[in-house]
Image 1 (cartoon, rainbow, N blue to C red):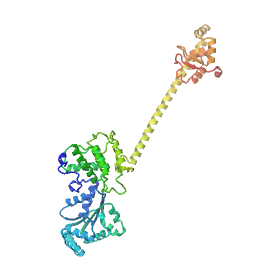
Image 2: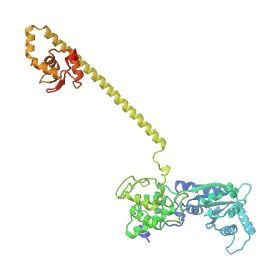
Image 3: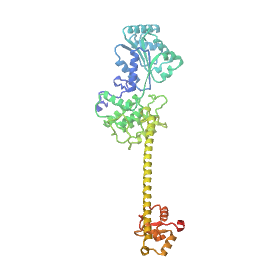
Image 4: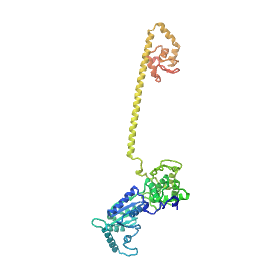
Amino acid sequence: MYSDFFGFTVKPFELTPDSNFLYLSHGLREVFATLKYGIIQRRGFILLVGEPGTGKTTLINSLIDQSDTNANFAYIFNPDLNFNELLHTILIEFELASVDEDLSKTKAMHRLKTFVNEQFEKDRTAVIIVDEAQCLDIKTLEKLRLLSNLETSKHKLIQILLSGQPELENTLSQKKLTQLAQRISLRCRTESLNEKDAYEYIDHRLKVSGYNGPQVFANKAKYLIWTYSKGIPRVINIICDSCLLIGYGRDQKRIDSSVVKEVIDDLNKVPLDDFDYPQGKSKDTIKEVSQTPLNKSDEISEASPEFSENKGGDDSNIIDELRKKVFRNQESEPAEKKQRRFSVTWIAVIAGVAIIINIFILFFIFGSYKEFKNEFSSKLDAMKNNFQSQLGGIENSINKAPSDNKSTIQKSLPVSSSDVKDDREKHTVVVNKGETLYIIMLRVYGKADPKILDAILKINPGIKNPNFILENQVIKLPDMADLD
């Protein structure tokens, strides 16, 4: 329907396990290599488990399609059978029996044994794959173990791959199946996609479908898809397929976050109960690897779409709406550990470096302040000593001067006995224009004495230079009794 509109040669998000669309993330690549190794090296039993929709069946189909001609596969996709029915189905898959043929268990086992021996002599491998193996009961699993007894002294003649959901591991852990569990030589697991892999998964399927145009899904649209799907490929396919259908209906070739939100709202009305969520989690919980709010604009760093962008805007309430509708009173799970920006070790290192830098800064500031204080005190003392020496020189000159000169100096000072008395009683004096502390001491005390100067400076800490005082400045004066 929408393939021609978007330019697809095939629909990119079908739910069928088409091996052509297999996206090998780092984890899935390791699983695929393990399965191939187990078959080629004749390791006997191999176990593959994973949550529903994480790509187990697609992986198995790809394993069969990519295998060389030296392997024969019996693929059992519906294991809801007893052992006799399962054995008959295996023979049908190996083309050793017909559907209508009635075989006893003895004949069926003999026919199978003859076949695997012939295959071994031809250097070929017989592989039995049981998908959805969690549906097998304990008796069938135990009898299936007996098939592994078809072996030589050095090699297993039959390779058996059991694929199923995590419940299969719980079944195999039971005491009755201890012998079977011990024969499983290789175990592997499929995981949901992380954020980066989910984005690449979407782009990969679009590319395989023949699309080579501009980016279809905006970055924030991809983020919403990954968040809601929890990285499960099957759920991603459902959302993406619905988004493309809406885009086609709107004549819109770019899928933005509003389209994804509409699809998610529709899915919430019909919960995906068929998609069993991981054990210990419900459809109402969701992994929050990023706290990124959504922005109304979808134009964010198209060159680097693998990580969510940290921008806010008018659509920042979309996540909150999802939490109300989808999460339903559930707390968000912790962020995936491998997506954390800093480990505890790095945080400790950074904090330590910051502390050391602060110590150096404080040391520098304190040292500079101490040097400034010492320099200022030394200059102040020098100025004080200079003033005192000048004051002493002036006083000696007055004492040595003739009496006429002394009287002239005294007359030149604007002072009277009443002024002196008033100033002494008030203990303050207002500086006249051109006056210095020397002149004020002569005007108030009738003499200029270093002892008086020290007392004035002590009670007037604001005076830094005895020779520099301001007109109309009010200066406190010590009492004569204090000076005595």
